[in-house]
Image (cartoon, rainbow, N blue to C red; front, top):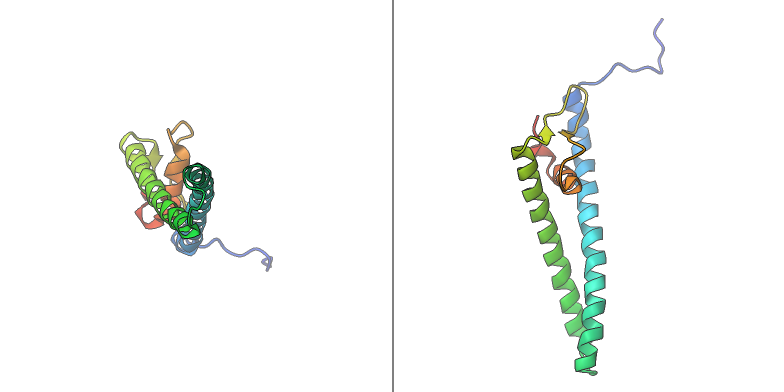
Length: 129
């Protein structure tokens, strides 16, 4: 008799398809958190420096600086991840996933590995496989 708690293994393609939205969400959250933290640090520094020049600095200027900085950091981070992935793939640090894996194999000695992983999370359809 079969044990009902043991389910047959699913097709790896189905597992990958199911995990893609989760990977994309994880990647987007990483980008958003990094962009927000970096933007807050830069906005604080901008505020301190700008208030020394003009004590009556408008809060709207500070808000605009924060929003623009956050958007620029987000775009820069995604572009840098794309560039790191391209270089890693070109130099052989990224290989196709093996059977049963949903993510590509990325060498441990890959330069800027975290950016390559971030690109894979943001773009699961572009992964080698």
